Length: 289
Ligand code: MN
Ligand code: MN
Image (cartoon, rainbow, N blue to C red; front, top):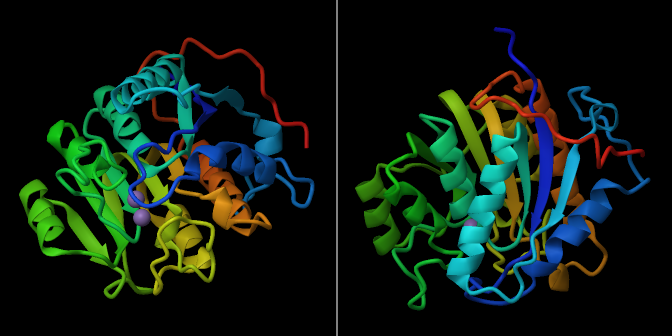
């Protein structure tokens, strides 16, 4: 049977009650959309995919603000599952990093042998932080506990402590620390890949609009090279941890928008993978820019 292309489904996950240090990321989806639709640039990716011509479906923002952490987790998982089951490839806009656990779980249950590529200054492997197992510092511990993730590869890490080193060993996490990252770093997977981009993987010089400044990070170019260059099929992604309170001129929102563009382009290039029968999505949300 001929492989059918999956349509990209954009969804905003405005939740930051699981942030340990400061609020703000709940305001991010609107800022990223604004950057994405800005007339200051066009919608053709660096590799020549015209997202304006492809179109995507914008599912809007989930109403998560008043929810408890467990209700928000369940609502996110249900929405992501629905988008995939209707034939979409998910591009999620966080939110703090806690939104990635339910998104990864929904993907892992639908894409057997799912790999996760996680770009972050932090490994986010805490068993629990501040008595919160759904903390934005814990999503990858929860994801690995499902037993459904084939490989978790983390890149850009520069905050490993003893507890998280032990957690990484327990779960078999493969870590490319920032100190080890270089031009010769190769990232390769067999099969479907979910990419989770925490904007604080970038050096604060490139992306100052985040809650946790961690100097010594990746450049914008290095992140783009990773998005374009890893081996495997990108089936879903999220961009998280933009904090608009720390982004008064929208500079980091533009970085987020740029990465969303390149991720959607990569998903379009990899779009032949079919996990479930595509029911088709309504032709709404087509970008006119
Ligand atoms: Mn993170
Ligand atoms: Mn981080």
